[in-house]
Amino acid sequence: MNPFTKSTMWLVFCALVVVLVAGCASPTPAPAPATQAPKPAEPTKAPAVEPTKAPVVQPTTAPAPPPTQAPAAAQPKKGGTVTVGLHQEPDRFWGPITGLTVAQEVGDILNEPLIRIDEKLNYIPALAEQVPTMQNGGISADGLTVTFKLRKDVKWHDGTPFTSKDVKFTYDMIVHPDVPVRGRVGWDQITKVELPDDYTIVFRFKTIDAPFLDRVAIVTILPEAVLGKVTPKELANHEWFKTNKPGLGPFKFVEWKPGNYIAVERNPNYYVKDQPYLDKIVIKIITDANTLTNQLDTGEVDIRFRMLSDQVPAVQKMPNLKLVSTTSTTPWLIWLNNQDPRLADKNVRLALNYGFDRKALTGTVLRGLLTPAYDLIPPTSWAYDDASVLKYDFNPTKAKQLLDEAGWKPGSDGIREKDGKKLSFDLLNIAGEMERVQILSFIQQQWKDIGVNMNLKNVDVATMWGNALPKGTYDMAYSYSGRYADPADITQHFLCPEKKPTTNWGRFCNPKLDDVLLGAQATMDPAKRKELYKQALKITTEDPAYVFIAWRGDHSPINKRLQGYKPATGYLEMWNAAEWWIGN
Image (tube, rainbow, N blue to C red; front, side, top):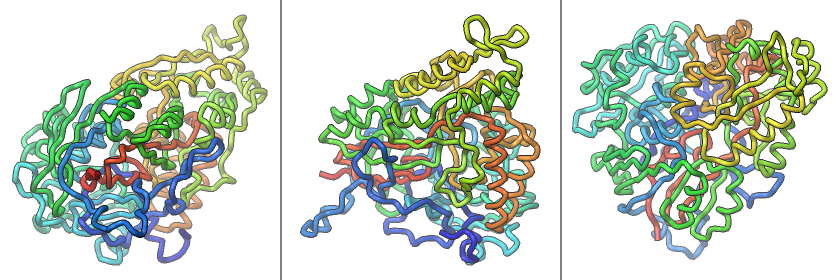
């Protein structure tokens, strides 16, 4: 896609969200909307894993039927239960207040956003009748007004009609200062929300917010009738966030046994005719990666998501499974707490980046399945500019020089010291997956060689995402970053904290970078946006806030009886769960 043609200028404005949505596509394939995000190479069937190749996108998990196969054999049918294995347990089921991907995945089969994206990275309608564009009049010529026309046939699980009042209430709660949402960037550019009728909502902006449709697509709607009488300060503690009862999605909440499973059942009144096909989905919480893989082998679990590379060989040998591998726009990284005076020094952060060998790590521990990452904009993005990226080739000599310049001198034990303090950090890692430990042990040893000590601390999900990262009570932490495909998402990771970004867990601040990022977000001109993101890449790699490691490769082992799964090339894996069905 050429981002500089007139026909694609608005595509950039509506660039793809890596969306957290339930699968609710229409019973027949939806027409490609006028708004389509800039996207990487067309999906192709994933080859057998080779030691030097990164996985590529498969558009579908089912092999093409032979010419003699009857078409009826591939038709979806109703009934049955599918068991999903999750390696983490959710906390609450609403995206704006949870930092957990798994929580948003479960919430988005119980509830719905206005729009979503499909496996081809196109926007498609959900609760809205169509995706707003300039062509259909949903977006004004100046980009400052966005209008959604809502479906009139949607009801909450309790039978209450869904209306524009629910959408406005959701927006009001996102921007209310007493509601602990993770960020308000973009939403704070809205000056007015109008409700011409029960099925129309109009957003008016003071400045252009290029990725606004991205933001809309990751937010499921709140029930005004249930939560409208709750004070904003108490809102996030309401029981609804643990159940989404009522929701708008293809499945309804049944039961949550903490540490064990979450059960959901078919919504018989879902607005998409005949969907969902399944009667029930059981989401098992299995934090040990080996146990989860074993249950895939025995058939106790039908599907799992984001399996790490070290278990790919074992899964490929299991005859009851098929493996779908997709590339991701999400990097693995080490978050650095820039409020720590030691990490506030740019030379120290640069030394950490130069101080370990990404290419050796991805080629050995990661089996050549992943490629090194140096920044937050993926090479597949229209906004990426390779010449602007400072790549940290392994250079321990340079790393030591940078630490010397920062005043950190080797102590008697080889670990550097300054002003009586050691250059020693605790690094938090979510326990349960051996590959994580192998990666961090590799980096730990190479950092030790340059005089930096890293103590690996395995913790649970709640400690990292519920406490350490959002509160800044950590030195370093290892995870992948949830993000959209639109490059504007990097504002959430880099804007200065006082601007309330969603996921600047490192408390990084560079005012020059803020100007660049906000400028790129406030224009519809793709050429201007690309030029500004080139500047952003240069700034963020020359003054690194974090230590990026590798672009995540997502592997989904699936029981062959499960049909209809479409890989999430962007983000959440259960985006089309309403289309799943059980075959022979």
